[in-house]
Amino acid sequence: KYGLVKENRELRQRLTDAPAIDQSLIGNSPVIRRLREEILNLADTDAAVLIQGETGTGKEIVARCLHRFGTRRDRRFVAVNCAAVPESVFESELFGHERGAFTGAEQQRVGRFEYAHQGVLFLDEIGSMPPALQSKVLRTLQEREILRIGSNEPQPLDIRLICATNTNLRDACRAGQFREDLYYRINVVELTVPPLRDRDEDVLLLFDYFVG
Image 1: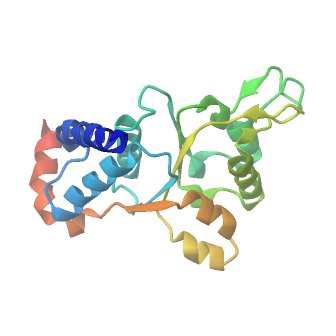
Image 2 (image 1 turned 30 degrees about the vertical axis):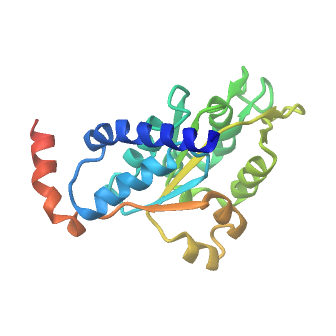
């Protein structure tokens, strides 16, 4: 009986969210309608999602929809563009550091993982992550804790992880550029955002939206 009540409640919530997601992910093509349905079905789970798509297709919009219509909607959405972070500060950016951990560390810094605690962490263009850092990210996801640079005290971590890439990570794994074990950790569910050339009927809708 409880399972039936829970299923009915989730169905009502999806029906409530359906019109709202139309305003975020615009389009009426079959591929976009299917993508919206997949997002609403996944939103209330904590499954790690890998969003595939070419540059400019709206991967971050999909990630924000997963957050907005999910159970963590009232918690932080923390986005990191892996391609834009210099390799020299990548570890500190993600994990934070203690005061005095290295030259120039004049005060404690909370990293993006820790800042996203109980919320959603979005790693955009994850294929750009330096190989040396991939093993540390994998360990963090496995152990569900982070360790600031210069600290011996791990901090518990409760996040939903969403990643995005515009490259083929399977090919990157075969080329030795991306860890295969990390790939399977972040790719529990895969969503594909179609390019505009595959959804011609949405062009006028998008035109009207941007003009407005």
